[in-house]
Amino acid sequence: MLPKDADTAFADEAYRSKSIDEFLRKRGIFSRILFKGYRNHPLTEALIRRNRVLSRTRSSIERKMADLKRWYSMGRMRYFGLERNQLWIPLCAKAANLMRTVNVLAGWVSNIV
Image (cartoon, rainbow, N blue to C red; front, side, top):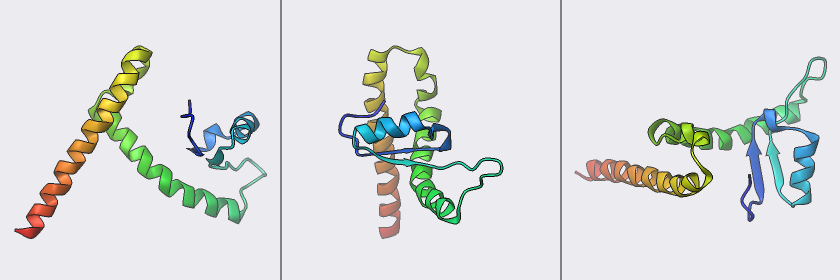
């Protein structure tokens, strides 16, 4: 599920398919889905470089999602209702941002003192 105002979609190679590419193209969304090599059809050097560049963005997002799953019980979201999840996700994101702010400020204050 993509937000209505999404302009780019990042995903790993498991999501690469003609139907998903067509879905994104119809909606004017740039596909940043990684390419996957197959037996006897390896990736070209250009696609390997593209995947490497896109993986940097994806890895930072994946780390934050792993933190949310680990610390805010978002790994069990599929068992909860849609209404609860629509409330829970923004709350978890705000809590994570508050924790990040506290850690950044603590580091900033310790550098001054």
